[in-house]
Image 1 (cartoon, rainbow, N blue to C red):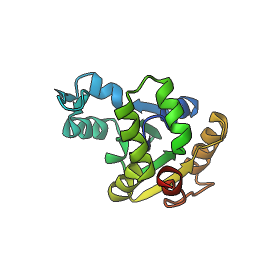
Image 2 (cartoon, helix red, strand yellow; image 1 turned 120 degrees about the vertical axis):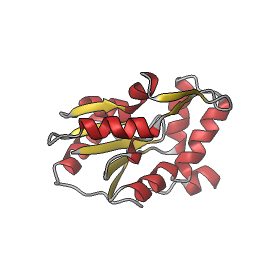
Image 3 (cartoon, rainbow, N blue to C red; image 1 turned 60 degrees about the horizontal axis):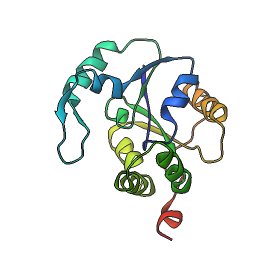
Length: 167
């Protein structure tokens, strides 16, 4: 079974995935490793070959739980866990990573407008949503583990950043 751990860049996907007791498949590493069409000239990032990724992930699927980690991992499995983070906290993380002002603004808008969440709802049969704001990485990893184990359900639609971002 494959489960996407997804969210806007900076919400904690990679950190949380590393704490989980499951096999983690880094979608970005697959794209960087050759499953791409080259660099998008407008955005300066690699353009993922979604068909190649889908074929590769289907080949990897097994009875064991696998976490697909990445900000577009929700395009592949039937179940996604979306990590959310308040725009104020997200801005600090992205600045610390050295993102450009334009890239920060783009990601803050995406988080405020629920872009990843909406896509996950469109692609997946089940979507859980976790507000990571103010929680430790261990707390978030525990929530993710409880969701996967069937001991917790956090349905989509709990988080709203519009007032914080646009208010």
